[in-house]
Image 1 (cartoon, helix red, strand yellow):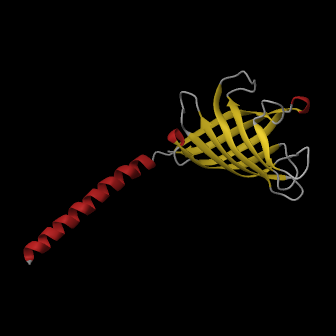
Image 2 (cartoon, rainbow, N blue to C red; image 1 turned 180 degrees about the vertical axis):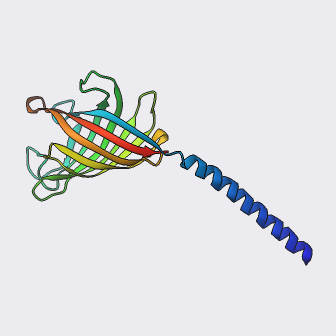
Image 3 (cartoon, rainbow, N blue to C red; image 1 turned 30 degrees about the vertical axis):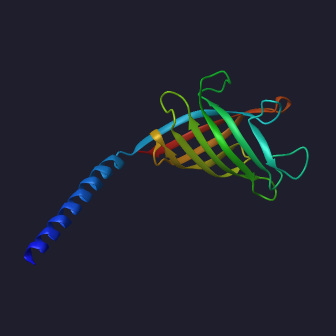
Length: 180
């Protein structure tokens, strides 16, 4: 009987030791919290043959951003500069839902999918209420992958150019992130 107790005790000790080693090495990796700040420019085409934003549901024709219940899908290029010919580093892919009865708020669910060499394959997950007719809006960064693993933070969004005749706008996104 003493022999089986000893084997059981040894096995328990080995399991606890392995768990402690794994947990401490993972904790060391997670303790290296990094801060990243970046500015990217959404190039938004909301009409025409090359539209990067289209309505999925809407209640009137022509559709409008401010119609309650409107859902639209987006796949906008994101560049490092305000000029649409500057280097593209990501795409903003997701949906917006006009969620306020008066059309003032849009719920944002966006994945920023990076394609540049430095962050290729990494993502940032952005979510929150955007007061769409205010000059500067703030939304949460609620997650990330790759170089932005477990990202948390916020982004401010500001429309810096709007050309209704071309159905084109540029939105400056300033991102402040904490990640591992």
